[in-house]
Image (tube, rainbow, N blue to C red):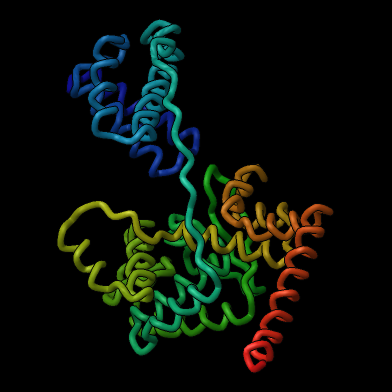
Length: 331
């Protein structure tokens, strides 16, 4: 890259940092603009023909969400360039509209399935105790993978609360049950036995080093849930092949947390606050998976009640018929 491109990229990174964008967002946006420069883009002008060629190639091998990420990163970059006076104010208007991304429904686990997962984790090793604590805390708190990996010793408050650094600087307090606090206390004793020194990170490896990032949490959840459902051989096959795998993720436990609370009568606004959502509508997307409460609501309709009565009468008639048939055959 030229000196001009490197300077523009460094300025863009400082701009994202000033906006309090998350580290992942900064990495993705800066990486997108860097690839744009490698493809031939320049800071002072948005080449529409080059952009359409690159987008056409991306549509062949990438998901719509990846294409939209490129568009958002470039739009943010050229808006900054315009504010800085390095290009025309209308440059970012050359960018096409984002693609429509199909909604992806997150799967959920039942409390019984989560119980199977937790029961399958051995607690006689530090790694087993750590993974048990992580999986259970994800299910009982609804934290994101990045939020879980970012927990430090100071995040555990003495009054049974977690202080969580959320997305977009939306920090929040998340309560935990006394049982969960006891599990965390047991993990903390095992953590202290590793002699980690002054490391503030809550989650450590068996050698006493902090877990790298949220990806480590993803791998732990994948391995533990995949093993618990009786397909360990499949998990190892995926590991050997190196292919991407749509498996079990921390967000599955996050959605299970929200669904479980809803089924037990928790208000939607409280669920939204616990999950750190800025809008209740976002929480509703998670709860759209749970149709059982919709079936219960439909059962209150007068026509459905009549249908239930007809089904009950039909079942009773069949039961009476079954009682009569043996006598008829005896005759």
